[in-house]
Image (cartoon, rainbow, N blue to C red; front, side):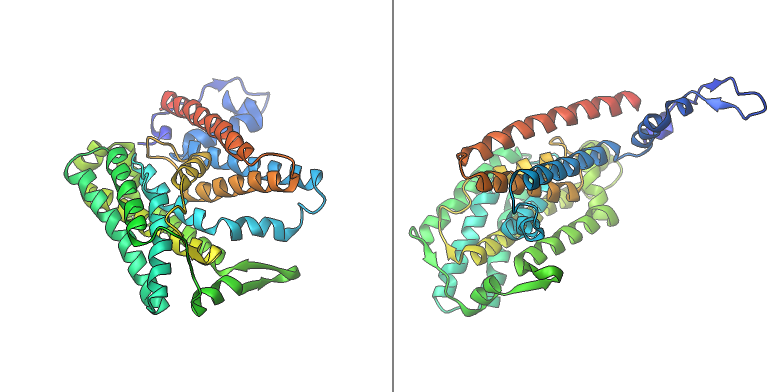
Length: 360
C-alpha cells in the first residue's frame, strides 16, 4: 500500500466567482506540488535523498571550479569515474545488501584477495581470461557461503561478514605477504588504453565497465522479480515471506552479488595500480557503505537507488579531489568531511522517514 492509498481527501475551499472549486493544497503552489509528489510515490524519500546528493555534487564541483583554476575542466570530472571505478562497483554490490537490511564488512578484504589472486596466478603463467574467471568465482563463492550462514543459520550479517573479512584477509597473506607486480600484457593494455571522447577527453575501460555494472544493477533492482523481492525484504522480511516471495534465495543472492562485485572491484583495482597486495582495500568497505548511505539508501533497508550510490561515490571522489587540488590540507580532512556528511544524511533519512511514516 502506498502513501497515496491512505491519503485523506483534499479539503474544499470557496471558489472564486464563476470559477471551479479549489482545494486547500492548490493554494500552496510549487511547495504543495513537491509535497504531493513526495507523498504520492513509494520511493519519494529515496528520490529526494538522491536529488540532495546530486545537488551536493554540483555544489562541491562548482565550488572547486571557482576556487581552483583547472578544476572545472571536463577531464577532471571524468577522472572521478576513472579513479573510483573499483569503488563504484563495490558500492553497487553493497547497495543490494543494504537494501535487504544487511551489511557486508568483507568487501575490502575480498578486493585485496582479488588483487593478490590475480597477481599470483598471472605470475604463475595463467592466461588472463582464466584468472578473471577464477577471481570472480572465488568472490561469488565467498558471498554464497556468507549468505547461507546468514539465512540458513539465522546469524547476524555483521558477525558473518566480519568473519568473512578475516578469512579473506588471511587467505591474502597465505598467498603472499609482499606486493606482487602485474606485468601481464593483457592487464597492462587494459590499464594503458582508454576510450576517446569528444573534446580530447577520455574514460578508462574500468570506468566504462563500472557504468555498465550500474546500469545492469538498476535494471535488476527495478525491472525484475528479484529486485522487487530485495526491496520487499528490506521493507519487512516477514511480510515478504507471507506473500510467498523467495526470501531465502534472494538473501543469499544479494551476498553472492556483493562478493562478485567485490572480486570485480579487486580486478579493476589491480588493473588501476598493476599490483596485488594483501594490505590493499583496508577500510574500503567503509567507503562503500558511506557512499551508499550518502547516496540515499537507508541502512535499515527497503529504500534506495543504485544511481544514488554512484552519486555518493562521486561526492567522495570530489571531496578527495578538492583536497588534492588545495595541496595544503592533510588527507585526513577527507575522512572528517565524509564523517560529517554521513551524519547529515543519516539525520536526513531519519527526518524523511518519519514524515513518510506519518503520512502513511
